[in-house]
Image (cartoon, rainbow, N blue to C red; front, side):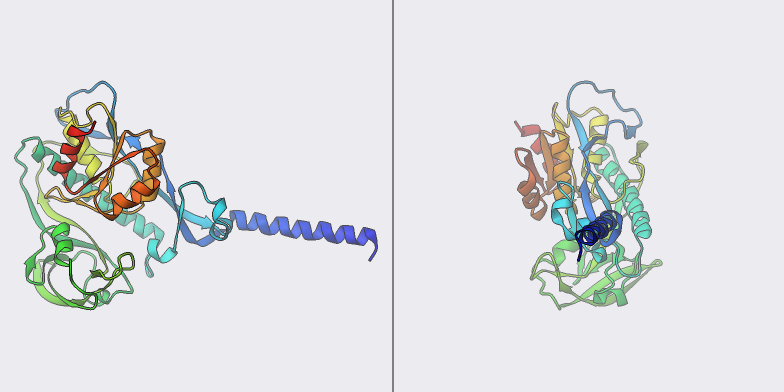
Amino acid sequence: MTRARAGWLLWGLAAVAAAAIGLAWFTPASDYLYLPNTASPLADRVTVAGEKPRVGPGGIYYVDVTIRRATWAEQLLPFLRPEGATLVPKKEVVPPGSSFEARHEDGLKEMARSEKVAAAVALKAAGYDVPATPRGALVEAVATDAPAVKVLRSGDVIVAAFGKETLTPEKLRRVFVGVKPGTIAPLRVRRDSVVRTVKVRTVESPQQPGRAIIGIRVAQSANIKLPRKVKIDLGQVGGPSAGLPFALDVLQELGTDVDHGRRVVATGEIALDGSIGPIGGVKQKTYGARRAHADVFLVPAGENAAEARRYAGNLRIIPVDNFQQALAALETAA
């Protein structure tokens, strides 16, 4: 082979390699990336009738996560992923038979329910009479690979399990503490105003070996009548995880000194009884709190708090089980 031909061959190989790298850099892969967003203040996003103007430092912040398709380069080469990112299998983001757009619409519905529950919790804490009746654990989605998919569907409301009343998602979770995977769970379910008993075989949680789950995502079903008009607008942000910061900010808008001059970032799904449930994307949300230079980050107690501490750096993590505990922790935090 002549030197000229060898040179052309090398140039050709380099061009092919460059094209392959470019294709991998821009072409979407099958899996998704969870990416951090900087925590944002809620003051301009929450409006409460009769709210009191507030000046001074601090504030209540919410934090969300961007979800997008990874490129092939990002999927294959972890060092190319943005700081704080996590690669998530497609089936965990978009269950089989669904779509990303459908999941986003579900998230917006979850957000709307979360806003109303959070407002009810905050107004009650402020001393208002809030007619609110919990009606059960609303099934928002059923895992397509779980036995429950043959029995339950979106829109069902679980009112009892193993003979115990489950009028809130937290009560439903508690009923399954100590239950072994594979156990048949008798459930009382309301569907189209008719209550019936069904039996569902539990499965093992992929995140917590040994823990029995049904394989569903639930939210609070309730009849709520707010004594004051509350408007919360986060645009296209979906999901229930901003429930805790919503409740904190509504209470602050009513004149209670919730943040005590600190920059408070919070996350957690809130139930009508004030209990705080676990959420996803904790790693990214911790990065988001750090980027906002938060003084404290309130997260659901348990695994969420443990994960947040792994990425917290110098950020103070405060684990909370319920709304009153969150208020007390902010009152006493130095």
